[in-house]
Image (cartoon, rainbow, N blue to C red; front, side, top):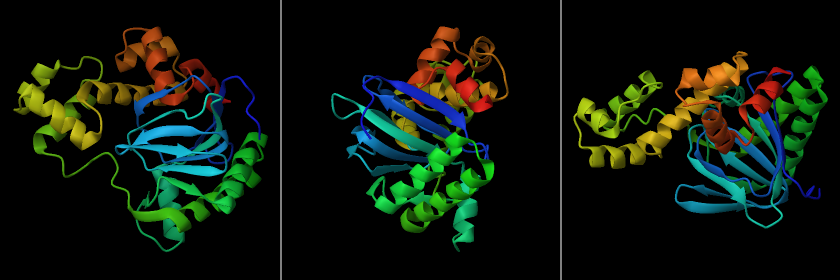
Length: 274
């Protein structure tokens, strides 16, 4: 598959399994900031090379390669070659992956043992599932999606995924995280946040980033984007969404949303509601 030479991105919801969202895109200049997904991420690179920062390393995935990420794993994403990269992405939720794992004799939501793989059969199944979903045939698309997820879980599942709770985080850090979720629209300044949880600003900033992969201000923007996704799926207009999740205006929402999702809020809403 050759690169088309210009950027495009199409985000939509699976026709037979609405809990699964999908992306079909070519990116050349666009770069994803440090972000997470509440779902799993299963990407198939069709052309070019994608690079992403992950757990202190720079990962490169080329044509036919799979990129595999657990929920809430902090990562980036940008072109590894001047012509960019083209890929297909599946975002299955935790409940679906846990269901697949249990059907295969496992327990709990699976965690990926690797973040990238060269797997011709896996690539074939992911591509078939993605294409079927684009065609809109609910039965065929659902069956091929399950077929692909069974292969991925059987071959790459490791220890159960821990998710965003990070129970090992100190109590002060966990309390700060809870406060950011509660005060998404009017968050405290770092100094106030630290005072409320009984820590110094410097220590809290470092400990928070160590526990959750992002410092408090970046984590809050991630939470806002995730909340914005929910509201957009529910049909709330982007301008109202911006106000409800604490962004200054629609432009502010759009800037952060595209950095995290690859598409602006309006395009995302049209895709997942279609």
